[in-house]
Length: 253
Image 1 (tube, rainbow, N blue to C red):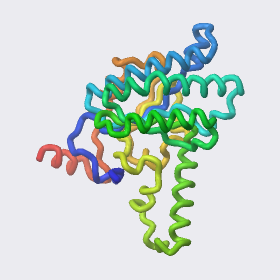
Image 2 (cartoon, rainbow, N blue to C red):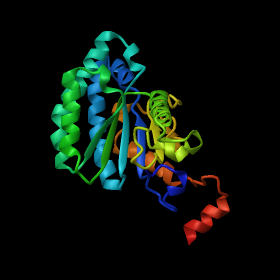
Image 3 (cartoon, one colour):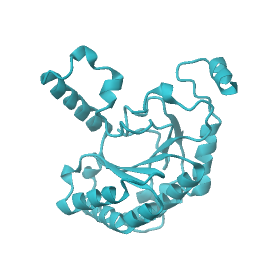
Image 4 (cartoon, rainbow, N blue to C red):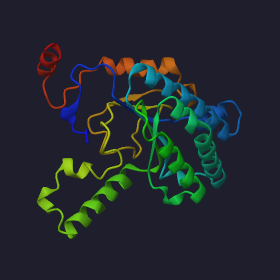
């Protein structure tokens, strides 16, 4: 577990973990008088570029919000097309990720997916499990409240079983039951598409994360746009409760 704010890399100008809400695919398509699914397909191409950039820049973890637990409210046809695109992308990209030493992890409630899609997810994860390069986390049917509620339930079961006392439930203990407990907390959160909300994404994990919002729609979020987000991150002083002078002294040590 490496999510406590005291685990930050002092003086680092490259985020270890970047989390992204990829917003604007539908609007991108509508601006071009295309069906919304065309925007989602273009969004997959944008993912490829950001994955490559993360590998080159030394980012260790990239977490992408692909499908939220609230997205089921969208029109049934669009949801069906999104599930099909998810399946196709897994089938086409898993071996490419493996070839490039990328480890794939899918977080979220998989029970709502078809059995075939659940099988494809497991196959892709197993194929890439031993890879040591970038960790690519895809949040699908995920919600931050769901993540916290599930962790609370697991903690409650351990207390009920006598394995844990209520007074022993610290933030550090609680974190061990969250989805990405084995990864560093996000350093940089990016949301494209102009909205300025976290939208139920990694609610616990984003406690100390630097937030970056851009008007750029996700399919247009290319390498240059990503480097702009990294530059913004590099210009900030992350204090984690300390004073600016303390941080400057630590960075100069």
